[in-house]
Image (tube, rainbow over all chains, first blue to last red):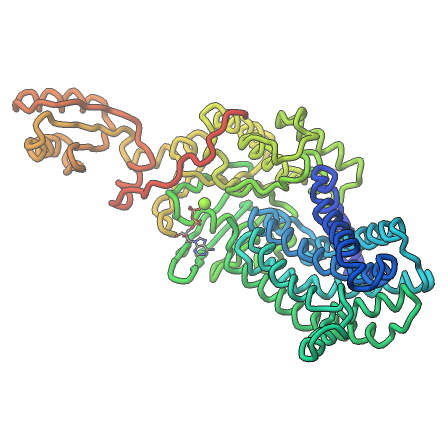
Length: 265
Length: 321
Ligand SMILES: Nc1ncnc2c1ncn2[C@@H]1O[C@H](COP(=O)(O)OP(=O)(O)O)[C@@H](O)[C@H]1O
Ligand SMILES: [Mg+2]
C-alpha cells in the first residue's frame, strides 16, 4: 500500500513541523525555558544545601542520592506542558485552523507530544550537567545513563496522555496548570525522591514503594550509580503501560467529544 | 458546477436547533453573503462547511467533493478565517505563515517566499519578525486572513471578518476582498451587517434562528424591505395612533408602531412629501422625522416580524489596519 505509506510519512513530516512550532516559541519566550529548567535547578540546590547534611550526612552523599530523583520529578512536571499547550490551541482556535488543513488527523497531537519529548531530553541533559558541576560522580556506565534517559522518556510518553486528557477537559490553560500541578505535587513528594523510604512510617512506606515516581527514581539511581535497577525499571514500565492503556483512549475519546460539541471560542 | 451546494443541513446543540434545514449554493467566482444576527447559526454553518463540525443531517458538496465522504479533499480547496483570529500568539507573523505552508507540503524556500508575499500583500512586512501577541487586533485579523490564503484556496470562508474593526479598516478589507474575487476566488462571507453584504455579495442568504428566511441578490432583498425606512415621531405621543392611521391610508398597510415612533418602509421617495402634507392637513405635529436606508433590523422586522436581537457589534475596537 504505497499510498497509505506515503500518507504516513506526510503525517510524520507534519508532526515534526508542528513540534518545531512548539519549540520555536521558546526563542521568543525564553522565560518558558526558565519554567522548565530553572525551577528544577532551584529545587536541586535548595534540597541539596538545606537538607543534604541532615538527610544523608553530607552534601556530597546527598547529591548522589537526590540528582536522579530530581530528574524524575522534573520529568513528571514537564508533561504538564503538553496539556497546557493543547488546551491553549483548543481554546484559542489554533486547533480548528489545523483541523481545517489537509493534514493527518493525528499530527497536531503527535506534534505536541514530540515537542514535549524534546523538552524532556533537554531537561535531563541540563540537570545532569548541573549535577556534574556540583560534583556528581557517575558511578555507573554511559550505557546506564542512556538507559535512564530512555526509561524516563518512555514513561513521559505514557504519562503525557494523562496531561492530554486534562488539557482536553479543562476549560482554560490556567486550569490545566492548576489541576496538573496540584495533582503532581503529592505524587512527586510522597516518594523516595528526597528521602529514603526507611525513614517513613510503615503505612506510608507501602504507598511510597508503589508510587511510580519512587520506582523510577530507584531505577534511575541504579542506572546512574551502577547499582541494581532491573526490578524497579520493570515495575515502572508496567506503570507506564497501564497509564498509557487507560489514559490514551480516555483522552482521545474526550477530545472527540469536545470537538463534536463544537466548543471552540 | 457550483462551488458549494448545501442541502437541508441541520445541526442541534442540546436544546438549541442551531441550523434547521439550511440550503444554499455558491457559484464559482462569486461572493455569497450569509447574513443574520448574533446566534443565527452563521458560525455553525461555516464550521460545518469547513469540516470542523458534523451536521446531524443534510448533504454538502464542495468543489464537487462530498464533504461527509471525503472531507480531506474539501480541506484541500478551502481556506478558513474564523470569527476569532486563530493564529499562534507566541510565533512571529512570518513563522505562523511558514508553519501553514510547511504543513501544506511546501519546501522551506517555497514556504518562505509565500510567507513574504502574503506579509507584503497584507502590509505586515514590518511586523513580520515580531511575536503575534504584540500585534493590534486589526493586524491579527490580517494575519489570520493571510494564513487562510497560504495554500491558494479556490474557496474562502470568512466568518464575520470585519466585526470589531473600525470603519477605515473595514473598508480596506472590503477592497482586499474585491481584489481577491476579481482574481477568481469564490467567497462565503458571514456578516451581521446588511451594508457589508450589500457592498460585497452577489447573493445573500438571510438566516435567523437557524432557518433561511430569505434569499436573493442584495437589490432584490432591499426591494422586499422597501429600500428606505421612514420614521416619524409625533410631538404629542397621544397622537401616535392617529398618525399611524394617516400613514396607513397612504401606503396601504399598517406601519410599525414602536414606543414613540411610527416607521414604515418606503420605496417611493415622493411618499415622504405626501405624508408630511397629509399630517399637516390633519393638524398632527411632528417632533422629528427621518428617512434612511434599510438596515438589517428592517430586513428582520419585515421578514420575521421580530427585531434582530442586538449582538456584539464591536468587541475589539482597533486602529491599526
Ligand atoms: N458548541 C455549542 N454548544 C451549544 N450551543 C451552541 C454551540 N455553538 C453554537 N451554539 C448555539 O447555536 C446557535 C447558533 O450559534 P452560532 O452558529 O454561533 O451563531 P452566529 O455565528 O450566527 O452568531 C446559538 O444559539 C448558539 O448559542
Ligand atoms: Mg458567529
